[in-house]
Figure: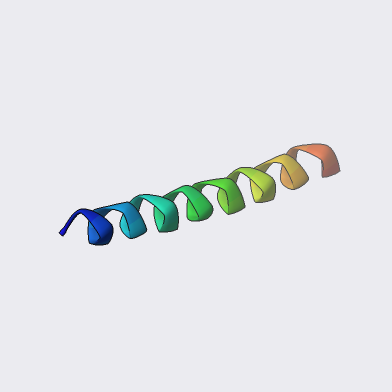
Length: 30
């Protein structure tokens, strides 16, 4: 059970970082 929630947190963190990178790129192109 704990491992599952850990995986979910890691997955969400990666998604969050990808979104952040994307937003930074968008801002830099302005």
